[in-house]
Image 1 (cartoon, rainbow over the protein chains, first blue to last red):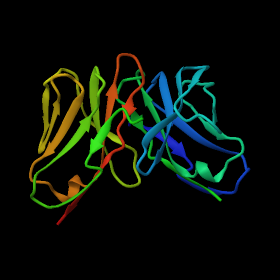
Image 2 (image 1 turned 90 degrees about the vertical axis):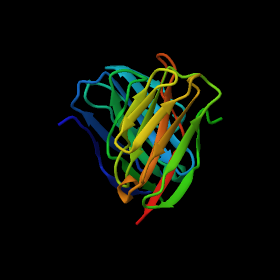
Image 3 (image 1 turned 30 degrees about the vertical axis):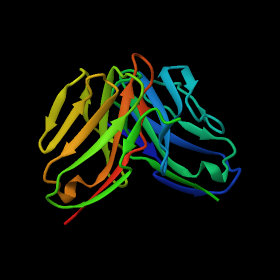
Length: 112
Length: 110
């Protein structure tokens, strides 16, 4: 079954404690991206990757890092999380930038 | 600046009623996608419209792309509780990344 898998699904943590949200896709897609979803603001892109070792900033990259060492994986790293990063995060993959996105089920992150 | 404006942002209606959700922009898009998102899940693609004036039907859902490719609408006939969810439109401009609207949260009451 074609899918995008995110872990963890839920995480409550404290300010400053580094965390990583993993994302894996099994569709051999070249394009992957991370979004955050906040009420009234819709989906905002954090970072994206066009292929292995190629990543670039989206609309709201501050406070986040990503890596793309393998085609299937695209982890999101928060080196020093802050409360304003409390949000619902989605990883997505697709054939290309404007192609329909396949989304994971989301990670609800709370930073206290 | 929101490039894609969806309206209404919230809509609550009774089962059996019809409704229309709008997705508007001042920009031209090469294609437009509609997604539905249910609680605890990620958005799932419903349809992609590509040609100006195109109409696509998915059971009781009708999607239309504006002639000038700047806007789109989603019409639901005889809404059912299973239609409840967050509806998102997303526009593509050439090879550039997708631009998402802020979403319309639809509630269908039994």
